[in-house]
Amino acid sequence: MYIPSPFKIEDLIEIYSLIEAHSFATVVSHHLERPCATHVPLLLHAKEHCLYGHFARSNSQWNDIEGQEVLVIFQGPHCYISPSWYGTQAAVPTWNYTAVHVYGKVELIHDDQEVLGVLRQLTSKYERSDSTYDVDSVDPHFLIGLSHGVQAFRLSMTSIEGKAKLSQNQPIERQERIITELEQKGDLERQIATLMREKLSGS
Image 1: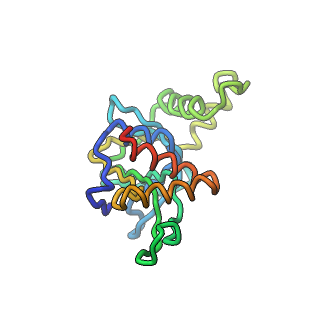
Image 2 (image 1 turned 45 degrees about the vertical axis):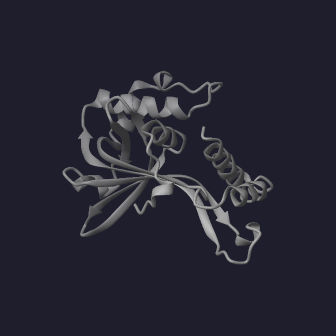
Image 3 (image 1 turned 90 degrees about the horizontal axis):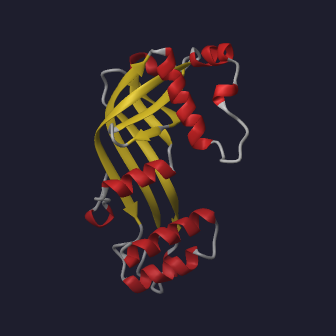
């Protein structure tokens, strides 16, 4: 990923926080002589330096993914930045965003109990605290059938790149103008405004 120095995320905790908050990722590998991508939710196990997830078994991308260097893309909030907000005509449009690229090797998981463990953890992560759904209350035979319909995997992370392009290369006054404009717009814009304020305050 192209990362000019003002936009590079150096703090691994910040990178992991972005992964946790935007965990629906794009897994890219080489398949059938061309790039192939699948969009999947992933679990971060920071202590293991691993990501866990699964493909639908009918998705053939998993068939030849072991042994490759795989790219996983986590996309955070992003939005358009208009030069009309800068207070000068000597400017061009741009886009502010956050993203993390993870590189690593995939190991397929074949043990039924380990596969079910991945499914349980994924469900637990995304179910609301007031939800009445519980994987362990589902009929065991149904769960086994479900686990046979997916191919779980573990991705050992070999390198990570984090980028937060939040107008850090602009004068502080211009950054404040951008924040003011973004705070009046939609949800994604307000998320970017919050991140920009955090960068300005040094938090």
